[in-house]
Length: 112
Ligand code: AMP
Ligand code: ZN
Image (cartoon, rainbow, N blue to C red; front, side, top):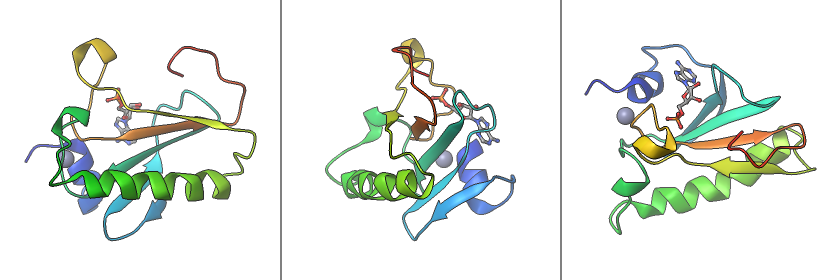
């Protein structure tokens, strides 16, 4: 499959890893919109939030267990934002489900 984030998980494209386990991979966004900008992705390919079903949603629960651990490790005790863009109007550019963690400054009400 011609998917950028599947290639990152496979190690075919380099990334700055911040966390990995058997289900999840997290790495720094190449074009950060905040001092801390991390992407958390399932290792199994899901296109977007619209691809979450009862058959694969356990990985989403796991991602939301991992996010606070990453936030703590990154020193985001003052808070952070979790965003997932779904589809054209949201500006989704990579169609492999991902959750942005944004923090390290007081965030505006814009996405980032
Ligand atoms: P979205 O616009 O929500 O689909 O987010 C895709 C994100 O992936 C953007 O914030 C990009 O900066 C980021 N991105 C694209 N290519 C890479 C890459 N090779 N390594 C890290 N982040 C990337
Ligand atoms: Zn993928």
